[in-house]
Image (cartoon, rainbow over all chains, first blue to last red; front, side):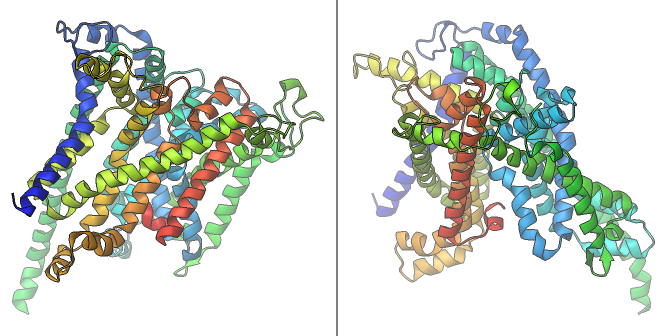
Length: 293
Length: 334
């Protein structure tokens, strides 16, 4: 073999190992979901069964946790996307001297371990609601939404900042010159431009919330989300029902990811079409002038 | 309720600072126009309130109250606000010496867990970097578009599975009657099951597995922007492959490397689910210890102190990475 061939073979071997490492455990888990043995096993494979899937559906605690996770996820989207957007817009306008400090503060939750965000949220709200006699706010769902939103807003902000970098400020200025109010510029120029970013941020926020464990396990108090129920189960003991659940979650997320991709492509296409229409209209309008000139 | 020095005005703090922001926004005159005029009243208010609440109520003040709690003694509710409710270093003393008063012995159990967590997190970070770099380089510089799309999809796919279930998958493999032991026994390589969970082998494997994606993407993004001509020029000039990487690719991809390392280290050192699931009964990762201070021992002040120590370590790590790579925070959080 030539040296080049050896190198290519070695690299192929490395890539194969890499993906075996990545997918091996998941494949094993997938197999155990369908194996009819009380302990999650891939070998020996007895009979193929679907009974573990049935067990999931009739598990009240899991179903309840799933519902709580969904609710928290949606609330986090409602908080984190507007806050992240505001964060990005302020970042753009803030005085250059304050920008570094501002950025440090709002990005710090991304770099703070999730457990610490959970801990500090619980401590703060325990004290705050105690002092202000608003104990009803001290509940798992509220605290989890607040805790998760602190860092998920930062994710959203980073998405918006990336998109805003390509925003053409002269568009807004032109609209202002033509008599549009600030609100109109925001609603008719900035928001439509940011639409793809809003969609990405919402999806990301929901997913990040849905699968969060580190912050949630502290801030959820007496309630339970899907991930905290799961973690409890896995620590107690392993049953193939958990594998079945994993298979279901993967199937759901794949469906979600596909739906998101379709939506995104459709939005892209619409935007391209709008841009083309605008260009054509512009050309048509300029044509007489060009011909005259 | 507790009536410590800080508490009576603590709830007012956010309102005060929002008012301060408001004032600053009104006074700010850039391009001759104030913040409020530039954005209009409605949107300006939305921006100030949203960012103010986020920064203060959700980020800064909770951290301050955690820090404040860490300097307080653990007291029964009746004694709170009483004469014994004073600021103290006893929680930090406990971390070092295993007792709030006696300083003659080190708190070996917790100090060791802390040291192991930090050292293991650094080693796992380096392992992930070494594992991901060749693939990231291949994807960014030599893979064809169709192949690249496939690789990206394959890399993201495992992360659709929850972190807990990924740890569970490793548990199926590493358990006493799991796949690995069954296979080794069947092959006759061992006569008794190996306790992978107790030996922490499962924990380290699971942790390095959990955050691979967060290493490979920053690397890929950074290497991708390197013009391929630079590598070709170096190759044409006779540079061996290792010098191309050492002198061209690595310096260029430094922000990506720093960012990937920071993320993986932070997530490892702060990991909770993976150690809870894959750690043996004797393995001590620092984060579960923090968790137990809160919800097993119900000693919140001590837990707050432990959490603050962890936070401080992570900040120190980020600063060290920034110093070593001579980068700014903005460059690694892109």
